[in-house]
Amino acid sequence: MKLIKLKNGLTLFLEKKSDLRSATVGVWVASGSRDENKNNNGISHFIEHIVFKGSKKRTAFEIAQGMDCLGAAVNAYTTKEFTFFYTRALDYHIEEAADILFDMVCNPRLDENDIETEKGVILEEIAMCEDDPADVCYEKNESALFSGCSLSLEILGTPESVKRIKRETFVEQMKKFYVPERTVIGIGGSFDEEKMVNKVREYFAPLKNTGNPLSFENLPFSRTVTLEKRPFEQTHLMLSFPGIPLEHKDLFPLQLCMFILGTGNSSRLNQRIREQLGLVYSVDSFLARYNGGGYIAVSMSLSPSKQKKALEETCRILRSFPESISEKELSVAKEKLISSLIMSREQPHSKLSSIGQGLLLLSKFVDDDEIIERIKAVTPEQLKSVAKGYLDLGKASFTAVGKVLRKSEYENIINLTDE
Image 1 (cartoon, rainbow, N blue to C red):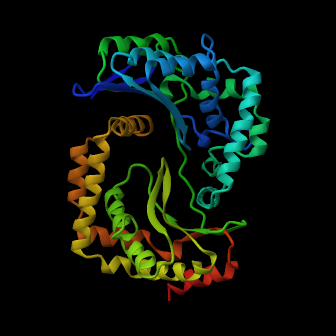
Image 2 (cartoon, rainbow, N blue to C red):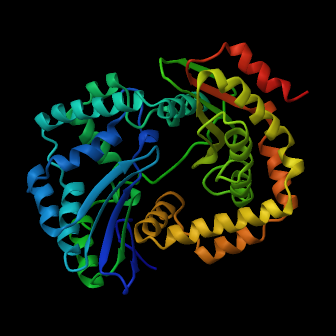
Image 3 (cartoon, rainbow, N blue to C red):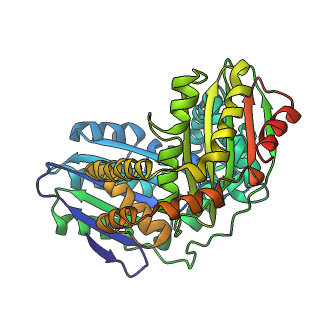
């Protein structure tokens, strides 16, 4: 990988793969819902939409048709900590595709009529997510866990906040956050290095450093029981524990714990709750990590009548988990984690995405070989130690969405496991 730092603070990296016949260009901007407030909540995601509505020299149709004429793919997504724009094209078209992408991001038209029209699209997107128990539970869970800080805000915003957004809201947000020191550009695959670097400089070198680098507060973790009654056919449950930030010494032991506990068909939760008892279609455990903190969660969707039994079994498994981890389970988890890493890295888009996020949020990227060695080095003692320290039901928070039980019923199930 080749790293270039422009004078204005923008980071550019190049990952050449001569055996490919295509290339991907990505633009990461540190602007997400974490960089918002209740009044402008949803603006980062709205910017992701509005740049596709036209630039100062291209209409929305010209952008779409231009990419189609190149046979190129173009898309974007927004998270709580950044927005990502990307295009992928055959190597002999990538310079033209990059020109369209950079023009969209650097010179959006921000037409007032387009803004009002796109509000309807985003309101439909919000409504769609409101019909999904898992999406609602995820948002309600983070809103409760991170209460009092901006990470509790929803990525899409609320219908009320989206309707309030005006043209000047876009101008203010982009002036503050779409700046060189909060931007990373990555180019991966087969491409002409000189031409692509010149194309980046053409659009981004004129931008001025504004002295607004990334800075993150330490995240809270609120222990709560959050219940949201909805007329869903399924109820979604999330049991959460205080976790770790993006970079932490316990990352790999905890990832291995997740594989043993609830990631994959052979995991304990899947084998017991799904295969043996038939209580759920799927159950999962995962790490949610941000700068400044995070959480560990067990998540499942199921029929309302089965939630009490499923939660009881989950708590029973969690209570005995730290002292019952075997060397065989650790060995299997290591193979699963390493293979998932290597296989994902062999997808050019995935590798590029990993590098870009690392450089944007941590100002570094850890080599795959180093990651693999650190995974292999995890011992059974480390695994048991982190499992005991983090998966403590006495520190848990709980969220349920759908046809929920009484709050006391959930509290009794979770607290009984501490006896």
